[in-house]
Image 1: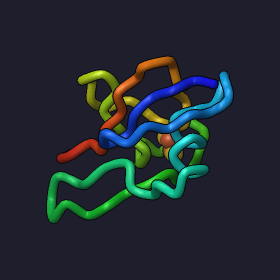
Image 2 (image 1 turned 60 degrees about the vertical axis):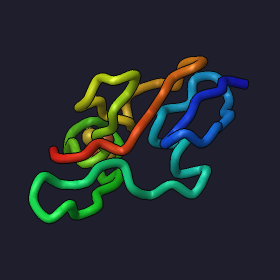
Image 3 (image 1 turned 30 degrees about the vertical axis):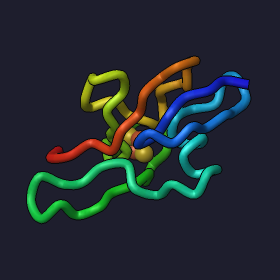
Length: 82
Ligand code: FES
């Protein structure tokens, strides 16, 4: 199993799992909050096109969770303001 954290919560998934799939399978629905009004957004297209699933990964913002594979020790956070 691959272990990572989302908003400080530990999550374990099978190798090769995308961040989006890992979050959905653990009941996490919000990946980012919009710049205006902090409206919650989540996975929409699931294929890297819509950019609604952006998260912060290891301090790097604007990572599409649907096309980012989970890696051991990865720190994933909700993205604010994009
Ligand atoms: S869900 Fe559309 S880019 Fe990730």
